[in-house]
Image (tube, rainbow, N blue to C red; front, side):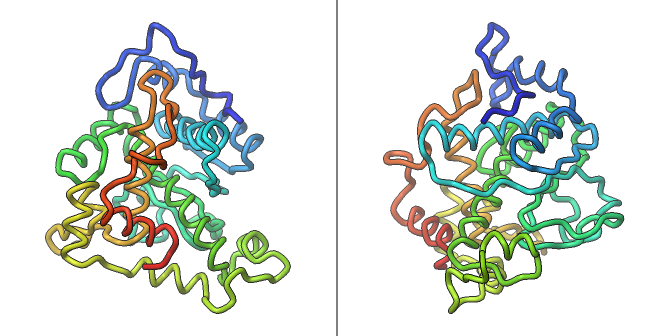
Length: 294
């Protein structure tokens, strides 16, 4: 089902700019009514969205929703995980301080994230409001890609990355069950008190995965094919990324973005099949992370 706020027909305005953006994206962003998109998201997906008037982030989220829909409907890719909530936030609003400075993040359980709002449902996504335009967003992503921090320089990178987290965590909770305090999470992943994996506490397993770090050899493999963020290369005193969640998100993001048609910005092939797979060593690390067997 296509979000109506995006018109993805090919036109003469679809001129490539080099990092995925084209003239049609610029026009879409310029014409984007964030409140209309929020209504579309609620009607189409049940997503509660507040874009704070940020047309750039709203445009990226609209494209991301359509991209994942396209993967399901066109290529029969079996992926779940639609975020129940999307929020654009300003730094002073943050209640959780350890995500300060992040371009975006996705929560694996129900948390109080913003000072003046109650806890958000698990798998909710948040995007930093510091980039107000597509150009600013693209420039920030370009800077991160230039130092090999991101696996692509595409203007949709951060949005697809966070959406990939949502898809991955949804997959893990379906495998291991959910043992947290989010009522909707319990109803979704342990319906009728049925736990798909009663021998493992799903919530604790997620925390274990989040704390998992790669060996030096694994970091070299991941860094060479994806990014320093996926590998967890240390930057000064701060350890950046480097756990199974970031590995999967960076891999999914790179695969999906590489599959996008430059005009429509929709996948032109299934990015998760055949020749699109990475080297055997990296593929095994990704598969283990995807299935939570790290």
